Image (cartoon, rainbow, N blue to C red):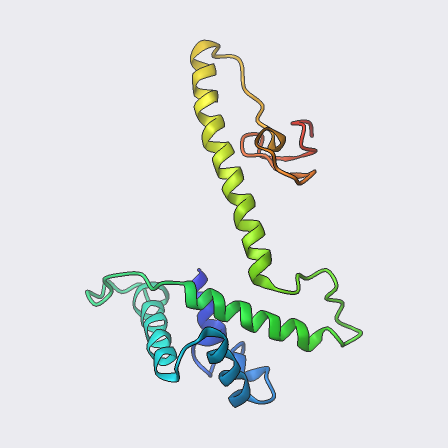
Length: 173
């Protein structure tokens, strides 16, 4: 999905969502993007081709093409997306009819916070699954109630890995 969505913005210029459709000066945007990514135009073109080919051969058209032997690395795609996001947020921040006050200023730091939270939840889920299995082996009618607080999550409300519902951090809905 990430590659499909990335290609909507950075893939073909014929896409209505391509970045060049929303910037006033495509040459300046491209130069700033390449500088931010520390890539030459040739390196970008090679990466773009890899992403586009993977999308065309393995995702969008579901071919079993033997040329698809690996997945593209997404580090450049993520950094390009963060750059584009920051550009868009800054471009609309001054427009009174577009309240972006609730959006994060930078996607990268927001992504890092969500990734850390997801890792904590995944760790809690794994740990609690082992505990649950052990407890169910001892008492089959007893279910453990895992909470986000158990793993030291700072959020007051979050998705609990075992309860599967929004909780207040104490295990209570």
